[in-house]
Length: 496
Ligand code: BG6
Image (cartoon, rainbow, N blue to C red):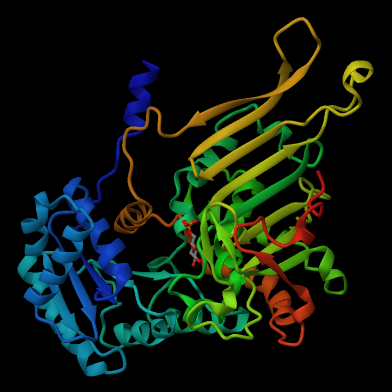
């Protein structure tokens, strides 16, 4: 009985409204390797609404046939199952649009309306901006200007990817530009971390079980550690990264989302609006950084040459397109406090860096030690405390470590781990991009940033960025060897 009910609840929703997905930046890498393959996989899995169509848009002049041939080549190269290619191809079109020329947007509008009546997508549209963020404002304004953002009986949705601005001021400017044509409920700001299985599980784990929540507070939790370590370097993205750095690239978005999910209060119901309200409340409670004691709350680093695995890798400043005197941080460790009743005094250590020893993404909740060790005569006063680990990479799993007696005649303790491995027993797996696109098709905002959250996080980080962007503040930047765990200053910094 219980199982039947569970499988009913778990049935996968399929978007019903017919729709056109318009991908700006369609000749770029992200579109060819992530967005279009994800749309294709949705079609393969019969999760794309009927009828639907995909229109690639970019500056390059291409015919439909040339565009389709390009995409087909990438699909074949990347091992996509081509079973549905003919079907996908018949719904795939291309238009060339010059982002600065309103005339080409008018042409797009005419083309779209013609195709909409031919194919029957009823004016429902998703505009996915897979373009450099500098182009967001002008594209959104032009779409509005030619009437493509208007909703009557139809719906229109806009997808934008991070970064949402460079600081509080530029983020507000972007928000103002988007809001000229699109209402907040039309905008979907992607954070791909939110589509990760373990991340989505955080709230279920916390709020669908009775045993954790009573312990989830300052009385029982010593500290929370949120880590995203990467072994990769800046790769081919130096043009972007050297002006961005780790605080803007990882902290302003992914790390803040992880923080809010561990720390937020339960909303009264699982609903996108209320969940994002609770997240915003956490962002509002972030204790401002003590600017006169920044070194005790923030460690910045930049990688120098080293070995990752058994491969020698160059220093950050030797990477192609990085300024040789760059002071851009590629590593940051931050101690953050949340000023509310639940979390008063509990440090949240947030760490992210490139070119570290190995890729590891997880959230570790460290509980306090037992209040009194009755084994002090044989085991000493300290007994290793419990840790609950939400692991996102290398494995998606939840682990709880606790102490148990080592079997045998002696009184010895050992740490044992109980784990929940996602790979076992999972039924339907979708990639992060498929999940995101599916949610937009269904109009579900739960996994997307709302503008107030973006603003609040920028408000928190902007003073630190202003202080750290200062080029003569080199002392704050610690070098660490590629392939290590970051600057030595971090060791011992994180308490227990
Ligand atoms: C992106 C950052 O948002 O996230 C990259 O721009 C980073 O610099 C990436 O490498 C990490 O994502 P993941 O899913 O590999 O942890």
